[in-house]
Structures are given as structure tokens and as C-alpha cells.
Image (cartoon, rainbow, N blue to C red):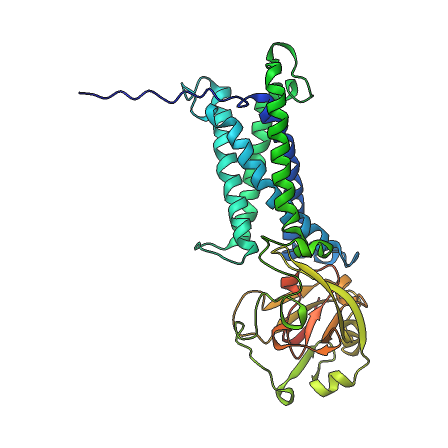
Length: 378
């Protein structure tokens, strides 16, 4: 006996274009902020060689703001995407699956959009916790899929433009008008989605917007927890550095007039104090007081040209970002230090003892710790 199973019949209310458009506006705004700030982050971490000198060093909080918005908008997009999928999922099972070329394009864009959006949000969330249960490198894949999602989103909006336009305002227009009795339920649903977005945002954004740090509930980082009340992503032990002996430390400044400094030599140079944030790609950030030697003073002693770039080399034995590069704007900024002290105390080994880079408007992964060499490059 052959058993015939009929496809499910969806009769739930609010699985309609008006509700989907209302939530889609919010989701589109979150995606737009997340994409633009993600481009900023990627550009600042991996600037094209010809544009490295165009990266600004001011405002000092620039990267902190953009990366905080990137992570916050990504987290806010999670409940929005789930709500959006709830409103449209009956249409994903419509029969026949392909009715025309236009419908095929729509289905293709939706498939790529949904898969890519779920991938971006899930991997982005895992990145905030520094958990990478996959074999590929997170940064280039996350960046590439972001462009794929944006392309699919543009195609989807273009195909659905007439329907979106008809339901964009508070009242659906023409023959697409929806039952008036659904209005209260729709408003309740949208209010619930808005409350969910507010909840996940307020309980996570304090990791970068420190006035709200007391509301932290779901964020993986507390900006006050860590050595010297500042979080760390990579410890000295994880980097294979450990505690570097004072008498063994040497800083090599390689340039037209190369020289080497001991730790005592560095401590004897004029010291400067600045207040700058550490802003990490995972979304947490916090300002701190740093003191040490200005990098521009070290470069001038080496007779570095005014527009020279600097390669900063760490003593760490393993891990990414062992080497970072600075354009001349950062290298010559008087706030850029080879820091020896943090909040009035000698650097903890996990914060880069005996010397680390700290510069304004720069991603945390490029604030190189355990600096052993500064190389002047053209």
C-alpha cells in the first residue's frame, strides 16, 4: 500500500508581505550597518599596499566605534533574521518550486541570502567568543561571504521591489491590502521583535560601550576582567613568550641609522602618557592610560624619512599577527607609543611586557605585544 503524504498547509496569520516588509526594513538596516563597518574593519586590518598611508590615526576612538557597531548590529540582526524567516517560511515550500525565470531568480537569491546570512551571523557570533570549530581561516571567508550576501540581497530586493513598495508604508496599497483585523497582531509581533532586539543589544553592547557594562549578560568579554583590569586575547604563554628577562631584552630599530636599545635604555628616554582604547575585532574595547616612548622619537633617532612606514615585529614564537605594519600617519602620530606601563603599572606579561605598541584608531590585533624590532620601510 502506497502512503501518500500531502504537503503541510500553512494557515498561520502574519506570514504575509506586510509583516515581512516591516521586519525586512529593520533587518536591512542592521545588515547595512554591519556590512559597512565590516568593510572598515577589513580595510584597517588588511589595507591595500598603496592605501596603507591613507588610514587615519584620528579620531582615536574611530575603530572602537565602527567595530562596536559592527558587532552590535550583527547581534541585533539575529532575532531580526529569525523573525523574518518565520514570516516567510511558508513561501519556501510553495508549489511548484519554479514558475518562471523571475521566480527562479527570486528563489536563487533567497537560497543564497538565507544560507549566507545564517553563515555570517553564526560564525560572527562564534568569533566574538574566539571559538573556531571549522578548518578554514575566519577573516577571508567571512569577508568573501559578506559580499555574496550583499549581492544576493540586492538581487532579492530588485525582484521583490514592487511588492516591497506596495507594503512599505503603514497602509498596504491597492489590491495587496491586507485584512484590517491582522493589524493588532502585527503590531504585537513587531513590538516583541523590537523588544528582543533591544534585549540582546543592551545585554551585550556593554563590552564596547562601557557605560552599559553593568548590563552585560551574554557578551563573552567583560571589559574590566583581565590582567590590570584589561582583557587579553592572547596570553604570553599562548604566544610562546613567557616572562622576558629584563637583562635579555633588546629593541632593534632598523633604519638609515640602525641602533639597539636595552630595557634600561628605553626607560631612560623621555616618557609620555596617553589615554587610548584597545578595540578588538571580537567587539570588546576599553580605554586605558599608557606610558612609554613615542615611536616618532625612535624613528627620528634612526633618521627615518618623514613618509616612511614601520614594520613592527613581535618576539612571540607562534600565532597570527606576529608582524604588523603602520603607515606614516600612525607612525608619526605623537600618541603612538612603545608602551612600557599600563595604568601606572609595569606591563603584565600578558599585555606585552616589556614593551608593546599602542596607537590611536587601530585594531587591537595590530597593537603588537612583546615588540622586539621596529623596521623602517619605504
